[in-house]
Length: 277
Image 1 (cartoon, helix red, strand yellow):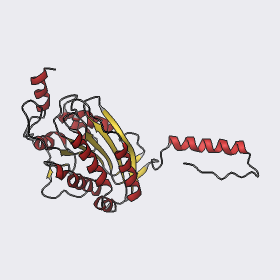
Image 2 (cartoon, one colour; image 1 turned 90 degrees about the vertical axis):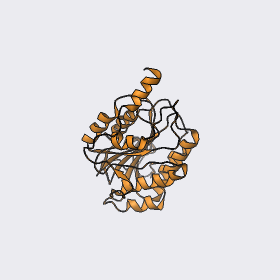
Image 3 (cartoon, rainbow, N blue to C red; image 1 turned 180 degrees about the horizontal axis):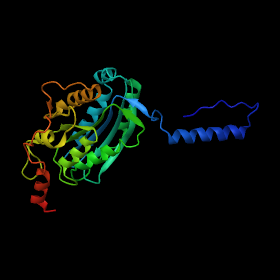
Image 4 (cartoon, rainbow, N blue to C red; image 1 turned 180 degrees about the vertical axis):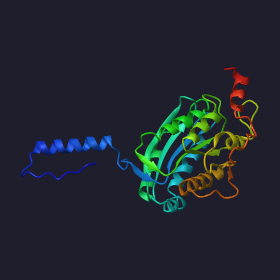
């Protein structure tokens, strides 16, 4: 909000009003902190809201991000970078045409800005949408970097989800195209349910994420196998991404040029076998 102190001497009331309107219009066109802002990392948090996620899981997932960005560990990690600040965007995804930017780019440089970002996530309504297009999330997420007037030393898309790609472009070439642009993709596969024959789940979702989804320098996967692991896993992942440090030994890093151990088109094949389109 632009505040002006109007003086009657030498400035008419109309001139003051016009000046205020011009400044307010300019503020609405150029977001605060977005004028070629240098940050340590531009990080897109891409969160699965497909119908395979039940409402409890959606709530846990969201609470995990809210708690992570306001945690002492995350706030301390901010201080490790040369700029001491990061840019965060929070998006939700499901089918190929079902992506939504929930919280736009926000410069986070301390407790106050972190709290504002967390509050914006908390206040957004929960939603669920059909199908699973990880490639669609990648494409939408990568477009968020374009023309955001932020200069990050690194660009990262952080994808969380509980299933394989079954709609839209193939995930492996999409991943490779983003990596070629200098974007790193990290993964948070959710393995909370036993795979059922009637569903499209696979037991090796963490392997699928490792071999088909993540990519780029230092890309890593942190699988979640139980609901109580949500908060710590998300916090660990965000700290690693923001600090730009090497993941610990228990976090798998994708070796360059490794051949996939699982078919990267398994989700599309399972969908075709069940529904035929």
